[in-house]
Image (cartoon, rainbow, N blue to C red; front, side, top):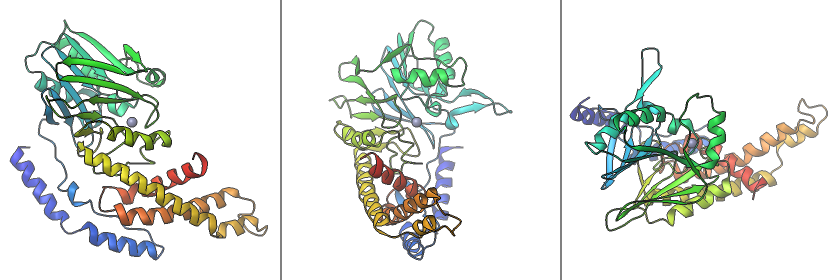
Length: 373
Ligand SMILES: [Zn+2]
């Protein structure tokens, strides 16, 4: 699709979407909740419209400072850093980047085209691939990238860097021949690429998975500060699922402050429609703080309200007699309902997908407050 056609289609989609205004629908949604009904769903906030489209070549390339790029499509982002002799490829997501044959079998990735476009005629001496964490949706295209790089730069030394905690899940995974890391570490690493450009890789355990890395390019006179951390903050969107299947909520909460302590203007979160800014990280932290408060309020209500399920469980004539799971479910749902109502009213038109994921968020934090805090 040509760029002008992409713009026309985007404008048409925006015009079609204009039938729904988030603030109007939010008022209707809250009325339904107050009547004990389900919210019918909210249209996306204005700052997510029109929907992001992808160039005909299958990816969008953005350079933030000399040699530092994000490569994205509508669902995934990865990062590439280039100097006159070195190439650093951070992740290799699957998503729509994968090229498939008629039977749906992956046969390549458009990311090799992105690398080719960035590299130009540079003859790299050293190439590093970095795995940001263990999930294949972010590194599943690496076999294609690795074999492309081996062929295109036969004289280059290619290393794969990753957190040492990644090895077990990769070995246990069902992907025979998947390129395993050649350099494993669990302490901070600094790659000095040139005067004014260095890449700091910090192991970060538990914000998403035990093998997470934060990749930080500090701000210098040569350009803006950039942070790359995947599946923790989703710029302009609420985290999917239970806070992006977080394994350690204490770490998850602290991680937001840790990112804000970095001197960054650009935050690459790995997903959805936008690369973020420092303001997006601030918004994610504010969402989390409100979620903690709303969950505490929900927990207080469910703890102090006599729930019908309690009497069911205590009643020998009830079908629920002795069924503690029935009570626990009701107890949790009562707290989640209070928490979700508060969060939807405050955030439903500020981040995309809040109406969809907020119940899972509230349940995670309520359980965290009950059990882990
Ligand atoms: Zn992940």
